[in-house]
Amino acid sequence: MKAQRLVILSDLGQFKAARLETTDRGTPRLETLETARLEAYPNRVVDKVADSAGRHSAPGSATGAAPLADDHNLKLETKRRLIKAIAGKMADHMQREPDLPVSFAAPADILQQVLDELPANLRARVDVTLARDLLKLPQKELLEALSRATPAS
Image (cartoon, rainbow, N blue to C red):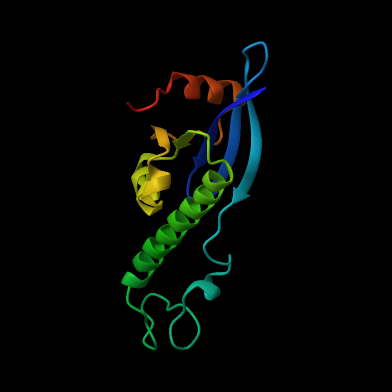
């Protein structure tokens, strides 16, 4: 089998790295290298952020009410951390497979942000980008989507 390319699929909750190979008969085959669930914070809300009393404020609470912007800032910070985690995992795989070109698929709202987090030398190796969430596609449909994508010239 001949290794053709490194395939990275991600969204803000999952990360998947695979090696796309061609069998001796010319059939594409995906070999999964890593599948990971991404979490920027522990699952308990109290562990994420709290007011000075150690709890979230309730609407209309007179004591220790936190500003409503805290939730917005928490969402932005969580997204930023997840994007950094995706770029870090992606860079690790790209360094382990230095000779393979890279295909990267992620939802449109995070695709460019993840690419911007990569070092310039690694970013240059990403020749196929797909602004789609392909993580939940069956393997046959995933291979079709990857085969339709063409490397950037």
